[in-house]
Length: 340
Image (cartoon, rainbow, N blue to C red; front, side, top):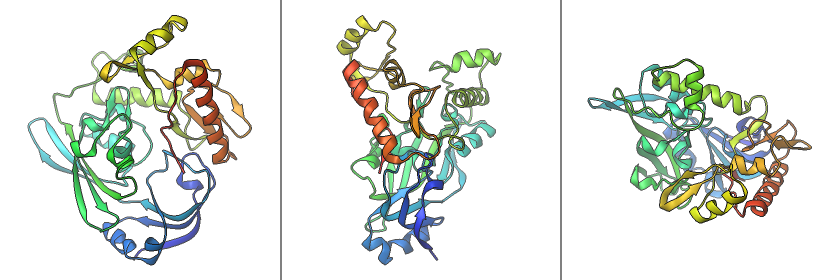
């Protein structure tokens, strides 16, 4: 039996800690509950929004429709080969819980994605990534339920149409499917360890690690993230607010003439990826506070709520940052966070 609540405060359901209210709110902890919800009058008459861990969303107003909170949990081992195994994971499972499960069982492939907030079901929507790894590299399939018909569908990796922080679920099929589970293929041996991106190599060296393992890489990433990023339980935030932009090689070379230290990483089609945090910092935003909101002092890519900030204050801050980066570098930043 489903329970549909009214006028629910969403402050505890978003990591920004923004106070906004949902006209209707329903938690789904079993697929049968979703079937029941889809036949309800509330669902038929109200606009809906699916909510995972609330770590990639900014509420700028109350939600007049229905919030569907994903609470399905569970991890199961499935098909196994000589050096890989498939993990069937329910959509409401915490992403970092899954990473810790893999570390504990010496399963490789997602250790670089340690401590990323949010749920497993939200991970393919965003194609989450960090330190040289993206989730698209390990996803085998995504199982989902059509919200208009209730029919179940399995999406292959190719059908998910993954891109940089992109997928078919973020655009063409946005809010049309309820992701119920994700199947990942991870390694049981002969792991391909990635220690070349960002500060991982230096952190492992400081940890006196000579031969990296799944656990030591995970430990290093956790250490880096805890050092650079604020804990949402202490300071409201949604992690990286902007995507790292890609620009043409000629644009990058032009900027390098006046900004010799500008970092850049080769991307596809001869494009160059430039760290958004560096651009924001060069515009003087790092550590800047505007009343109840601001830019984190340790990582300019993170916008924070100091406790009583409103969603519109965060949004205005983001717009100001976009404007100044555009003016200084002729680069347009794009928010990674979903703005409601």
